[in-house]
Amino acid sequence: MAYRRAYIRACEGYGWNGGPSFSTRIVSMANGRERRNADWDQPRYSFILPLSNISEEIYRNLLRMFLNVRGQNDGFLYFNHLDNKAVDELAAFGEAGQTEVQLGKVSIIDGVPYQMLVHALYLPDGDTGEALESEISITLDGTPTTAFSINPDNGKVTFDSPLSGGEEIRWSGFFSHWVRFNSDQLAMTINSRRSEGFAISGQVELVEIAAPQVQDSSG
Image: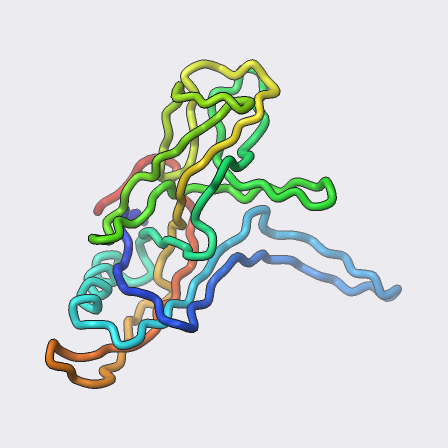
């Protein structure tokens, strides 16, 4: 499976649906309690994109992506409109000798922390829809630093020097999701004909996939 650093340019209509999901096995006990086991440590996002009266040009862009990735086979980028930005987000606390950190977003509820990992550090260009690398800023104990490099495909930061240990690592920037089509068929409907061409509607479903471990793309 390959990855495309590119977005489909179709604009979602009203009725957009998307968000994270987990997989939990639940066994009900005779005493009324439950035994619950979480199969996934990280959420898996999915998205349903209603496409209403899109132009033939937008349809052709969608079709090119679908054909290029061969339906469900290859991955590409999706920009989640409800969650796509980190602002001074806690990523981790440094450990002595550590040089690499995985970016993420931490939720702390009732003193219990949970980190959702962030991988695709890209955002779409507003005019062309092409993938742009997100500008990432990082602070160590509140002090900005530029002594690092980033793999935008998997969200891993490598510091130029080992950390001392105990540093509060925070970051800001935009991110996306690596996704694939959730069907090997792209079926659309012609609603009407306009002076500039057909008005086309349909629906596309996307499912999040694991990030590449190294920068790897065939497109």
